[in-house]
Image (cartoon, rainbow, N blue to C red; front, side, top):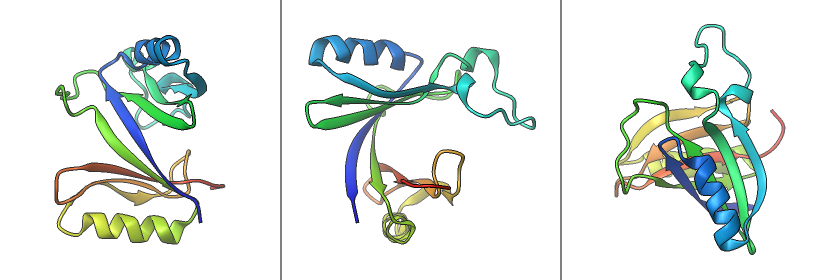
Length: 141
């Protein structure tokens, strides 16, 4: 079982700029980047035009470490200091469920664990200490 903790930076429309900055400042390598407009369209919830160029998910590599990024939705509350979450990545659905349930005990679930187009099992939970975690399962879905 492979498990990793990865810092996840959530920015208010400046993720692309931050990625370019870290590429120059830290010799970071862009591993992946996807804008909201590049994701599968949901006819019941179309992507607003002002969202299409914002970063849905991106990953850079700095040395041996990774940093993940995303932009918020326009108008979504965003406070300085709330940009960092921890992405707990595993290749096991069972491990993802165990971690998620343990963190949810005394915490608050923002998004229940569920299959998404990008993960077989993904969810967001804030633990009892106020630390937000994204539980991401790698693999086919």
